[in-house]
Image (cartoon, rainbow, N blue to C red; front, side):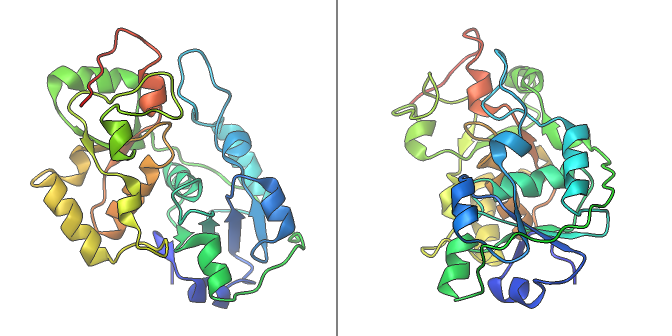
Length: 275
């Protein structure tokens, strides 16, 4: 069986030591990984591995160097036949969903996020370790699909063309411009609609059922097709969580504005909406 959206702790536990499975610990702090992690997992860091350096015109998490990341994936033991599992400490809302999206842009579909993340793994009393995995390097060849994301120019053009709708994954108060804890300017891209990513999860930090998610997205998006949805957040990370939720709901084909709000505000001439 191939996993392409989420995976339960039971299913992961049953497949922990399969030779063609690779698990990534995407928690922010390396120290957390060093203290305790799921057996066989490697640590993958958003800043160091999944992003390139910030520039004067970029958002906070620009796309990585694709060649370097492809080599790194090979060194981690990944090839075209590998089943990849990613987990973090926030039910996929932190960095696991960004890795999920990034690998799909590389043409690798067999990647899933651990439902409930590290906390659910602990609650279910699954095995933990401090041991590092033994890795056999492989060759990973990426097949980049550049249609999976949009640049800022396309977002600007859409203000007049209105060919797609932006779905903002930030909390409602950030969307309205009432607070902004991370970036220098508060507000939103004009005409965007809001879907805070935490709405995808239940009280335990696991994804809602596919049926529940489908009902919510259908209510929010109406007749808009997934292909007409472009996801945005503060820096192109939690936006991937909404994209993953749509995939779980059977709504495939949406795209990501990688630069997101933190890139949009780099140019003071770009319009901002509030309220």
